[in-house]
Length: 460
Image (cartoon, rainbow, N blue to C red; front, side):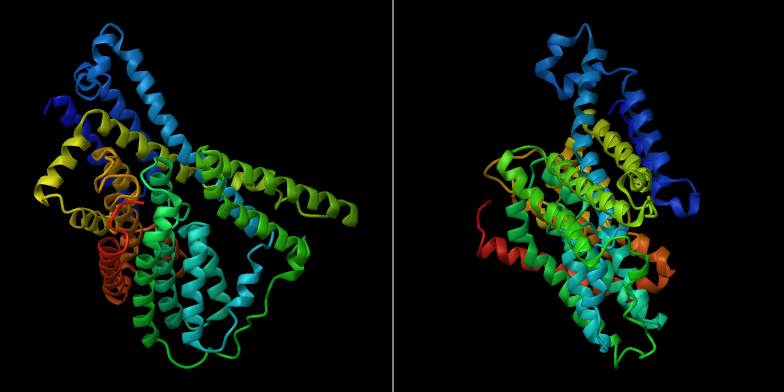
């Protein structure tokens, strides 16, 4: 291993450690990820010839006189692959923000109404699970916590519900091609298909939610306090009427569900479908606001129009993904990921249940995005094997990276946001929830083993 390779690895590891300790370092992880990206590729350019010869042997003889130009093309290719994920995320985040700010999720509050604590728990579990598959685990967690605050006044009970929201959000996102950043990455790259991941990962993901919910229900007894007001729908603050809010929900959320169908029909990248939905939703809301302008004479709020909501998109998260994915691409170009993948196969004798299971556990400690990106760089798609499209490895990776993040409260975006909103301590979650989430995680893997062994014995 060359000195330059070691230097690039050190930069990545140092940056990764800084990102993992963001709460202590007080430096935004997006800034570190961007620095990782730039420093790794800058070091690469000091002497790119050996790396090009290793990873692109067929092209090497034709580009020896102009290697920097070839490397620039390689970087642009990686940027193109990364951008499909980034534009998908930006579009999806904007759509969810439009639906949320214009009252599209108000109906969820009505569905949650019940006096029984355990009844509310099961409604929260299934609603979170379903919404997370359509939206994303981060957005779903925020929506559900906001609703939970209106329904439950007891902080002790609310913490139990919050723990279940984290588990349900991560489980729901794992079986959907649009439910989690990692599944979006795998779907965009062609490692999994929408039909394949839904048909084979749905039941394991459901099991990983049901078992923790069954255990947690014994922490809740009796009825909710009568003083809690569940009828507050915020009608007075809404610009649109009930029918218009339902149309916004149908176009936004229904459009998100249509994206996999659009891809299968047109064979265009998923982000194109997202842009279609965003354009339609944008047009619909503008028409509604034009009608509202005529009725109210210009007194409507402009803060909820798409042009204003675009400024609220979390660009720090988008830049984090840009930096981390491009840094991982550099590791791929120096051959480190390929060597690491081969080593893991040797150590575990090709047992992909063990490899992905460990990746899932690691995803509860460190961010699952670089773990999945690294895995995608380690292993190429190999038809007729576990590495085929919708093969055991890629589907298990989608499940383990998504569900595994529930084991620690810092292991997923859902956990981090709930931790901040409800002020849940790391220690409380580890003591009360970790073992329950781990039980569901293992049960889901066992369930997937049964499905692949006795039902889907070959890739779809």
